[in-house]
Length: 127
Image (cartoon, rainbow, N blue to C red):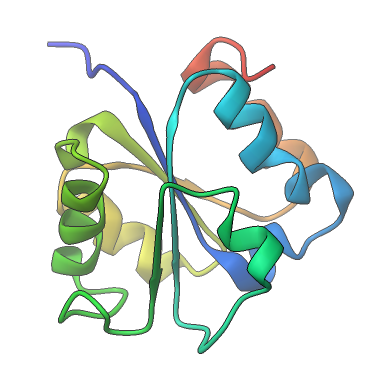
């Protein structure tokens, strides 16, 4: 069965802070009709960034923290989606493994070029 990828869960520090191309991902994902969540261990994010997401989860707000698979499952649930319908982008390998353990598709962010290529393949294409 092929997943119906409709959700994108992004990390803040190290992902969305990695240059203009990554900062533009939420806007591009929204244009593609995706549901968006920000899941970060940060204590705060800029207010203007919050406005770009359907859901913002900081720290252990859901009762679980990354890399616990439960943190990703609960974030997907807040989006109204099963984890298998979500792609998680994080720059920490253990966090990506936690996302995959709950059934999400994991993308390890290393460079904007590689991450944007991966997202383009998964969402065919991300505008």
